[in-house]
Image (cartoon, rainbow, N blue to C red; front, side, top):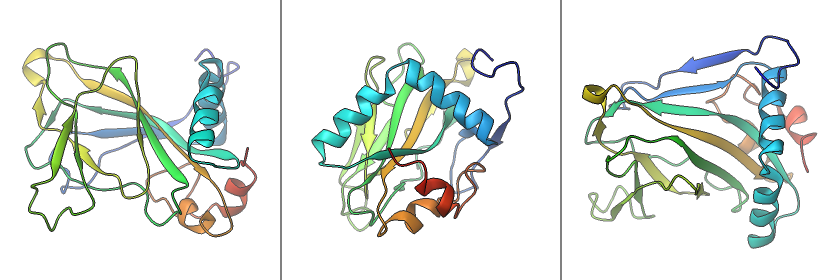
Length: 198
């Protein structure tokens, strides 16, 4: 890879359990060298401008990127698994989804639900169609899920970059570090994560 310094980068691929009625796959960094390589690529793309804007908008002190990777899918059933990535962080942890590959002429890519889900029987679920020049910022209790689709006949995929970041405090550090979806950093890598603060 361009940013690897001629060293091999290591990735892991994860497919969620059967509660995800899709072929959604997560591609994440499997070691620190790959993570740092991804961060260098994001820095060259201007990620600091984004982080500064989020910090200013939400009165945050210093953001640390906790995890980075890609999401890709060719199909998803109607009952997308609605979930949130963060909760109870004091409004200090986020995930941004940036569309990387979209299927021409396709519909919305994401379901989004308000705080009443699932007790509202799905009455308050909206749909989001990504724009190629904009990302979507998700914070505490942002219920979302992969939108129904089937791109298999076209041979196309939809893919996004996902960046998890947080304004770490002593109150939310353990919660943010407990994220079980990554191999790097390993869940509960509290000391490593604390040193990443910006």
